[in-house]
Length: 156
Image 1 (tube, rainbow, N blue to C red):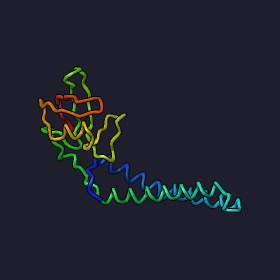
Image 2 (cartoon, rainbow, N blue to C red):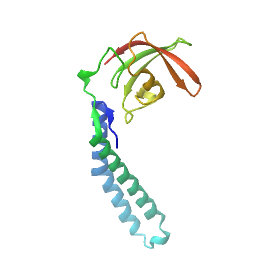
Image 3 (cartoon, helix red, strand yellow):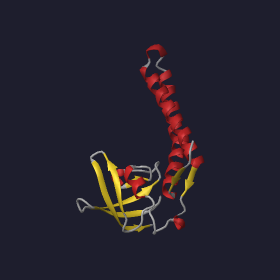
């Protein structure tokens, strides 16, 4: 698995989710399996099938989180530059065509949440603005066509 850049907050969220899955969710799933087994005949026991499927999903997510945590490269907040956009940067941009201004927080791919304006450094907008400086105009390929964004401000 390749490395993924991640902010301190994102790293802490991954660790909390892993802890929850290992300590709480696993126990809930085991209890669901135990209850389903008490219903008898496994060949017609949909509760058992559902519980085993859930167990597989939980174990897969645990494995995924352990790998992410093991290979994550933590972005040091002190090293975030305001000279050029990078993971951890907060960036104000202006759409050159519409004049609309937006602010994004560039994060690693595991932390992306478009509804909170947290965009991955691997997303179309993120990859276009990473490395750009204030005043630069970058071209972003989107499903609706190309857009041009002007970098207005970079902060931590």
